Amino acid sequence: MNKLLSFLVISSILVLSGCSEAGAPKSGTFQFSFEHDMQGWTVGGTDLDNPPVEWSIERSQDIASDGNTALRFYLNNVNDAGKIWIEKPFDVDPSRFYGAQVEYDLASADWGDMNLWTIITGVISKPPKEKGGLVYQGATGNSAREEEGFVWLHKSYGFNVRSNEEGKLYAVIGFWGTWETARTYYVDNINVTITSSAQDLVPAVPTGLENLREEYGPTDGRYGDELFLTWDANTESNLKEYRIYRSLKRVNKEEFPKTSFIPIATTTENTYVGSNLTVTEEYPTTIFYYKVSAVDEAGNESPASEEVAIEYILYG
Image (cartoon, rainbow, N blue to C red; front, side, top):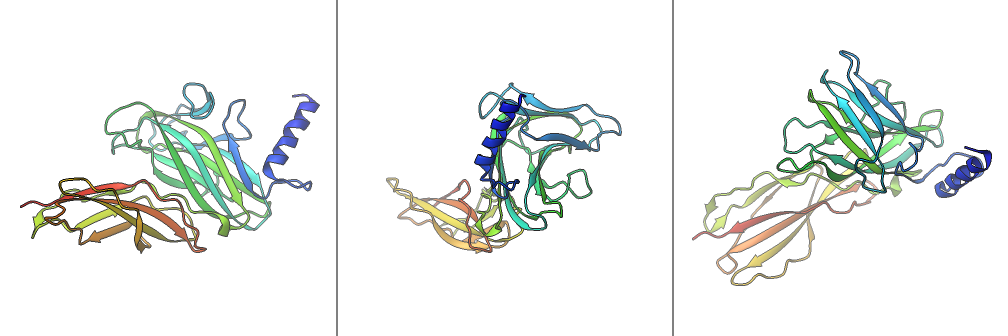
């Protein structure tokens, strides 16, 4: 790269990051799509030598969610322990708390509920190879009921973290091979947001909402009166609670419009038990819809999760 081009690239980075003349960006949102290079991300791994395993992380045009290029992660996990990742340091003020959020698109071909791997994503104050440096998230499943090939998913995780004495934070994205097989994943369209005040960062959207009790026995004109909701726990250290929203649709001879979602409860756990969900002879079918949001200690609320629907039918 010649000197003029280097100057132009550095200048554009300073403008996009809101960086002062003094140097390092203190906050902002940084986007990475890997169209031309690795954009400052480096690759790493651990637990890859006993026995040695084949692995790679490289730019690929196989598939992409943004532009033509994504990062391809490959791990032939014969030792049932391998962990591979990309990492990028960010310069911030030393020994200060920051809010951080990492969002990206993940293409996974892992379907069903068995033998899934574990996602690695975090913003940490030390290099990820150091002890305790990796942060583990949910599973790599793509929610398909049968093999469909690669499915793009959107992942979002929030963190509150104290920078180290050198003024560094490290963003890390990768995979932990928790099943002895070879697998490939793609990551694209990464956005890392760093805020100097955790009060300004909205929690991540809760994911994985599902109803674990889908079948109920009719009792006294009611087709069950409870449901059990569960979802993936958020990772924010300043998380206060989850807010439960409900909507419903009544049906008799005609189908009435779905009502607006309203808040009905809060909980500090990533579960919720609902009760007294009834139907009547006037409306023998009722469909209940639920969403969940996350609220932090500052009162910031995330957007609501995807909804789940539960149908209750009156049996005479």
